[in-house]
Amino acid sequence: MLQPLGCEIQEATGGTSALEQWRSYRPHVILLDTLMPDLTGYQVARQIRLEEHDVLTTIIALTASAFHGAQERVLAVGFDDVVRKPFHQQELLDKIQRHLGRMKSLPTPLMAQFNDGLTSQERSLAGLTRLLTHSQAALSAEWVERLQTAAIQADAQSILELVKDLPDRDVTLGNALVDLVNDFRFDLILEVTQQTINHL
View 1: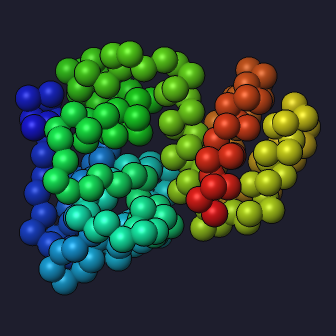
View 2: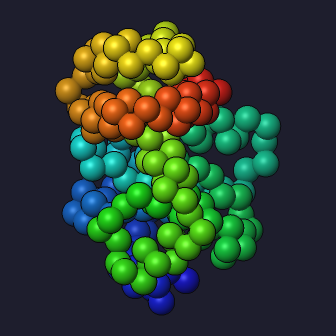
């Protein structure tokens, strides 16, 4: 499905294999079944989040679970999104587009496919959402709420002070927030903090 778009595909036979593939290739996106031999998708996603640093991988869960709260559980352990099986090809492509819209190192055919109809604001929002979501383990709900309050008040100084509180591993998130402050895009910061608070 993705190879015609210029993607390089690596397949894993189970959870341990998926983790080894990620360590070797550091792909832009992983489609991860939540139920696999040896390690579950939840365990693999959690381990990836512990090991990755500046370069973040988009992890999309593939699950047949219809239980209430299943999506919240998936997002809480480190997945970026979830696709329920069985799924349509376009649904999966739309998910990938939303999360990878800002990446510049994707193959040209894939970038052309993903950028079609995606505004620069949507790309910025998708990228910041990923960064803030991946930092949730290290950020308190209070920190995110203070960021939201500062965005509501268009208080650039308070946002820059909050950036200084970020751990070293979140330098990419800090730089993204500083760029938005410099561009006076408090609206984007407000929107992404609201999405993050909904998942805390």
